[in-house]
Image 1 (tube, rainbow, N blue to C red):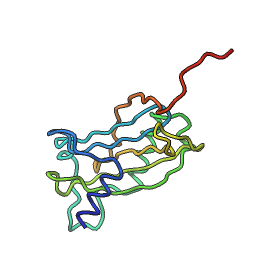
Image 2 (image 1 turned 135 degrees about the vertical axis):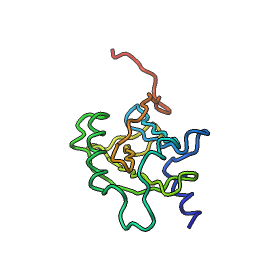
Image 3 (image 1 turned 30 degrees about the vertical axis):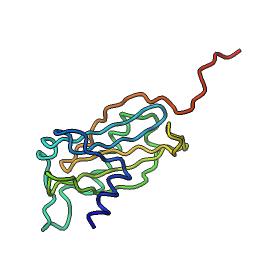
Image 4 (image 1 turned 90 degrees about the vertical axis):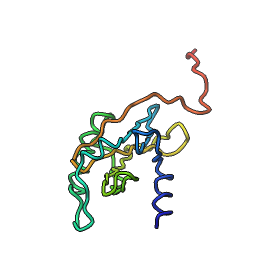
Length: 151
């Protein structure tokens, strides 16, 4: 089971990046990278999902609504974006009992990210109901043709 947990983090782009940062998630859309970094202090301030509780502190619907609002601040025509999935993810040690929602959206017209994959945006919602604001950075497309002015 632990190896599946580790593999899920590897596939979705979660990495430990520093002593303070316990996990980071990145998504790409058009020429932008959306980077979410979670630190221990931030995670400790959110409610835990006690193993004796059947449901997490906030519902998937609450996470979806928070993520939809955040998406509207990041992309145009967000109301036309499709929900792909809502996933509960446990956070790595030392934040035992801490979970997040990862809410994945796809634009109405499929676009490709700089790596050539279909573009999606993953948004992070904490168990206190807050959808995190990512750090946004420009990304240069791989193998892009040089900018040439029109005739």
